[in-house]
Each structure stands twice: as C-alpha cells, then as structure tokens.
Length: 169
Image 1 (spheres, rainbow, N blue to C red):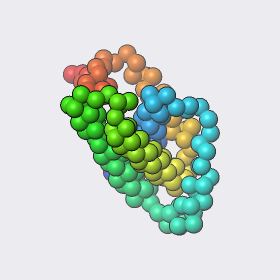
Image 2 (tube, rainbow, N blue to C red; image 1 turned 120 degrees about the vertical axis):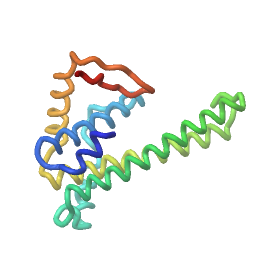
Image 3 (cartoon, one colour; image 1 turned 135 degrees about the vertical axis):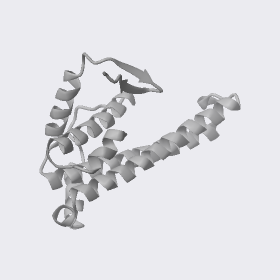
C-alpha cells in the first residue's frame, strides 16, 4: 500500500507503468485465486473508454486525478472484503456452515456481487488512467512482471496473507 500511495505523487514514466502493472497484477492474482478465467480479452474495455470519452475524462482528466479515483475505488473493495470477513466470523461464532443457513448464504452472495462491482470500478479507473497516459495493460504488466521476476532471489515472507520483502541492510 505504501508503494501505491507513493506513486500517486508521480504517475508519469516508468514509475507510473510499474504502479499500474502492480495494481493489475494484484487484481489478476485475486481473480486467479477466485478461480476465474484470466487469459481472455477484457470484455468491456471499449465500453469503458467510450464512456470515459463521453464524460470528457480522457480529454480533460488528469493521471493524478484518475489514480486518486482508483485509490478511492480500492478502498471500497477493501470495505466489502472486510464485510465478507465479518460475515464469516459471525457465521462461525453461531456455529453455522454457509450451506446450513440460507440467511448467511444470501448475505454472502450479495456481498460477492458488490465485490465484483467494486473490483470492476477499480479496473475501469485503471483502464481510463492507462488511456490518459497512452499505455497498454500488456506494457504495464510486462514491466511489473519483469521487475517481480528480477526479485525472485530476494527473501520474502507471507504475513497475514500478504507477501512482504525482507529489508536488506
């Protein structure tokens, strides 16, 4: 998250490409972990861009403004994920399994639908930001993956489900 915040200060050049690449890679990783099919074209890419052009975001918007919108949308994703976690805890405390309670299953389904909406908003803001900068998703992911692969030798650990690079002196 600190990389995300630091990059809102400077979105141009390789730094911006790395940020967008890391963000897309994170979202694609979530999609993979969610057992979704990843390797297909983004279905509504053109529709997002047509909408953004119709609202003059591409012609009059700024990269910094767009990345701030991405951060706002990412916060909404976080809120839904926290709601899902709270629901799971509530369900476990009452001794239920999801399949045992239609009430919890319905609430989870509604939250997952909201999660899809919020992740979709993050993707849309990234697509618009890429267009403003004249970058492609593949360019950004190429740069991010290359950098990640160059770090393969670094020591890392998984803390609360997040990969943390160990600092070197």
